[in-house]
Image (cartoon, rainbow, N blue to C red; front, side, top):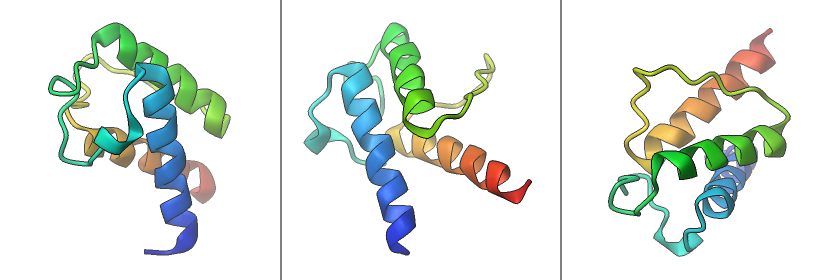
Length: 86
């Protein structure tokens, strides 16, 4: 995995930890938000943290499947890739 990609993932994980007040050591891609006791309000805080961290806007649709830490990482990486592409 390229260093830049690892750094992006680390920044996402730190933003999740800050927004949801979760120990970063518990944040694994397969960990569910429910198992981490991350509430819907915490998810909003996480989105704000990520938006501030990357200077992006994260669209939130009701049908988003943000069930795991990995889903959050994938969504943000997708947004960043789309922004780089154009």
